Length: 187
Image 1 (tube, one colour):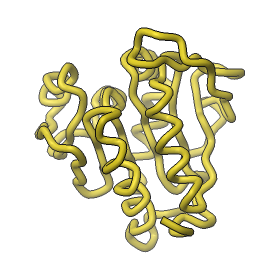
Image 2: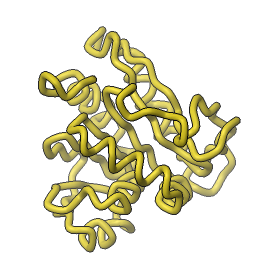
Image 3: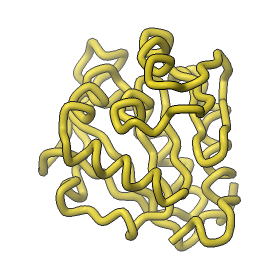
Image 4: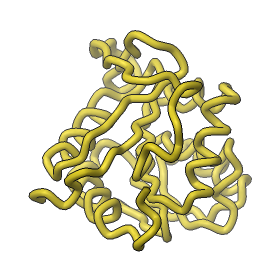
């Protein structure tokens, strides 16, 4: 990974309860490949991070509110996990509408662990092949996805992984996916 993503802007949508390693490690890989990123959330200031959902793990500054962020300003979307994070996002109509609008552009989307929950709520997983944390697989199936158990699953514009244990494979996969998006998919 060198400069595959120079000039690309990545939206990272997250809320309180985001798993710290699931936002920091992928964001670092994207930054290392030349991308810029914004943390977009449902409230301003900072979001509270967690470690294994149980332990407080500091905070992450919010760059933009979802109500102010514009889909067309971003080349790719990343949805980190943590149980509470996507549970809050899927309850917020602005966040769900933003994710749905982003997916409809055809631009690349990556989701890790519990992150695909927001995709299910946005009703964009029907007919898609995804992986996730085991506890949300039934929700994904009920939303019409084909669920698989693999380290990294790539299906068209979607790249998904199961857990923080998959980060060594997930990080280079999202850099590759974001860099190799079809012409016209990246704004």
